[in-house]
Structure formats: C-alpha cells, structure tokens
Length: 143
Image 1 (cartoon, rainbow, N blue to C red):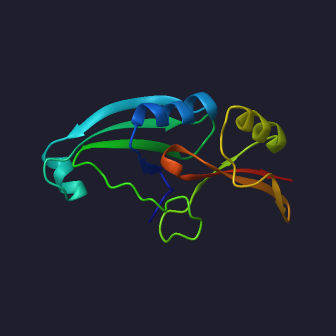
Image 2: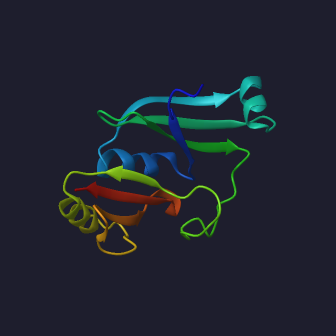
C-alpha cells in the first residue's frame, strides 16, 4: 500500500542556479547534497557510469520534498518544448501561497517570467511561471 508521495525529482542543467531559484526566491531549505554514482546508480537509472549531483530541498510543513539533479555523465538532453503546457509527461509543480498577489509581485519584481497575471478558477487563484530550465511552476491560493 502506498503511504504518500515522497518527493518530486527535477533534472536540471545547472544545479547551483536551480538551487538559487528554489532557495532564494521560493524559500526552500537545502537539507542534503550528494554526488550519486556507482553500480547501484547505474542499475537504478539504467545508464552506464552514471554520475550526478543532487540536492534535496525541503519546505517547512510540507509533506513532499523536491530533489534537483544535474547529470554529469551522461549529459541529459534539454527538452526545447518543456515550457509548453500541453506537452505530454511531467506538467508542473504547484506551490500553495498565503497571499498570491504579494508573491506574484515579489517574484515579478525579481525578473521571474509569468505566463499571465493571477487568474481565478472557482475558489482557487493561480498563475504559472517559468522555473529552472523553463519547467513550469504554479502559485496557488485557495479561498
């Protein structure tokens, strides 16, 4: 029986820059950083001589962690269409906020690219923005 969703793992091209976005802009905390390599790594990912560095990020009171991973061997292929919302596969990570208007303006002032201003859908207010390597992130506030 599945107990819970444990983490979301996001492959990035620049771990340090990606950490800055999640830590400095979004308020996550770095819990662990590690180089991943060896036979166990090769077996789990199905690659030969795989080597990557990963960072485990946590957020206060969150029940799920985000792991950022940068592969050094083999290098990953960047998806030029990852920021298209109708792309099949991984869609986005939603972050619940207390005051979406304030958070939207704060991030916009820091140069974050938003797809639109804050929208309303039923009792939810939301907006999408570009994260590291153009992955889609969402701000969400529930009334």
